[in-house]
Image (cartoon, rainbow, N blue to C red; front, side, top):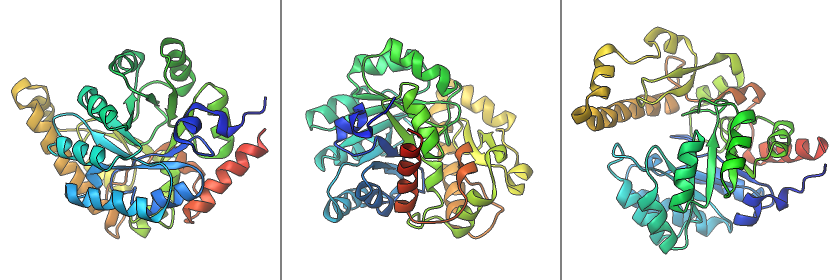
Length: 324
């Protein structure tokens, strides 16, 4: 069956040619990547926490709008570990980004304020229970994070998660994880997804501001080299299993686990873990050594060279069309 990319719900919702969001990747996504994704006929999002201040976030939004015409989004962590949440939300609404992606918390306040300002909200979910909750709150779409995803992956395969969410929810389902080329994109869309969120294969693009060593690691390592760690944010996160990661381990200490379970200290422990992990990731992303922690997903198996965003997107579309 021929599937016209422009006919999928995500394409129609954002008026894009191909239903792909370049996933918001912490310390990887930047305005240059977003501009190139828009120019290539897709869209993308940046984590708000990629900017040191909310005013830097505002400046980046303005610069993207000046450089290109097309939709883009901002990813906001909406739980208590993000002390800048309310300011980030305010600025995104004031600048009227096209969509917000919420992660790691209740999106209720975000949805209410965003809709008052004409901004769509897509919510990360890993199961049907949370998906039904965010739909009831008024989310415009669900980003179904499966176990094949990079970063904070889910626990269910896309083969099970997409049909389940499609049967239980009425809003569009955007699948996140398990896509490294156009053939896999077609397979995912045929499986019922209304759009795709793709991240890891873009880490090694020319426009990414991370180190050449990080990009080279995405080329040199593959699917079998991806492991889960809880040391970065407290929540399981996929990283490349470099010798350094093997040395420091992937599990929190007994003391860290105890603090995370303590109701009074949990909020502050999660925030501390996130800050410590963020600094470690920041050092890893921009330093020039393999002795660091690099976040990525299994789809780096398909990354064979460092090249421009435009080439990566064009290949995805060509492979999709070839697979028809």
